[in-house]
Length: 111
Image (tube, rainbow, N blue to C red):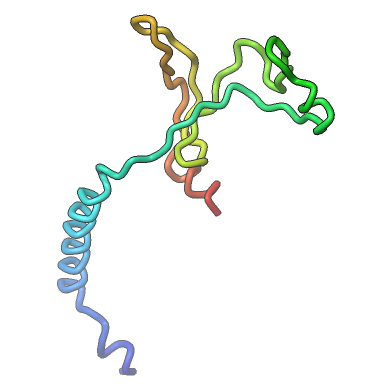
């Protein structure tokens, strides 16, 4: 038996360690639930030379890369989390989520 095996927890201890970790995770999650994040919606994007940007004024129209009727991208702190569509509720704009990016995909995009 080498030193690594001697310090390894038994299967019963291993299960207990994971149970403690799960409870600790719940407590840690409670700590961050009230942390504010920035939610932003992107209708589309455009690339303009600075010359054209400086010529913009009231009434100018900028053509976006995305077509009319396509879904919006929903970002939280700059990370894509969903796609949605604009809705109007009591004279205010909102967004209805039509597709939510899976947690594993969100983590993959962070890397």
